[in-house]
Image (cartoon, rainbow, N blue to C red; front, side):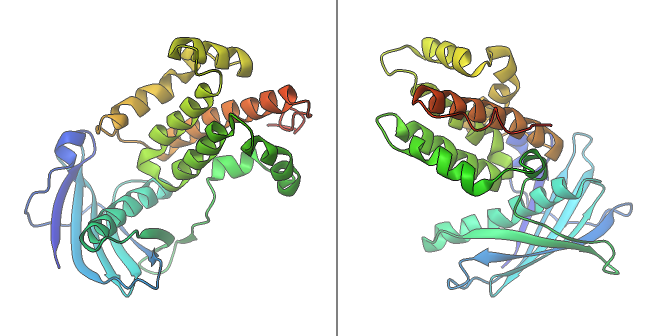
Length: 277
């Protein structure tokens, strides 16, 4: 099975159009290899000869990929001038997911994928990816996870608990789906906004939430600006650095919301007492 695709970095309308073309290697690009797995492995999938090329606003290729899935094992050869390996990992995951999404649509299956490792032609460098978002795991250093989970868990019950449940579910999707991080982060905050009163208008809910967590519309604008196009089917390119900034902002709001709700229920806040950077 063979797919040929030209995907652009700056024009996302053009980026989603597939063109039949021969993908040529860029002479100045460095080559890396990525490996991963399609889950669940009990649902076997094999797709070979998948190739794609991403181009910048100048019309020049900045990533070319050759992808193969055999018995659920993912192998990807990448030539790119992208210096950030995490951004490149996100690109590889997106392209691999595009294949599994098509296969899932054809078969009616719900596939997931993991990109686990990157390495050079001489096995140097070799990088094994964790499951963490580095900027968030650093933010969480020194925290007692068990203590915090037990303190926060009661917020999952009660008349307004559905909003908090949806919030943390969306934050999990934000971690797992790089291209849709702004969408899920913003929707997580929208769920929290709903908890401030169904009888209030949307503007009044945002105002009440801002007062409760100490945030403002201006602070939220970078996230809103990236989330709104995605809500209407127009995703915007996102670097790993930009993604980190959105994560830190969203997590800070949600942590303040948790402390606000805990205090309102008569419990002690948990994040305002944890040393932060």
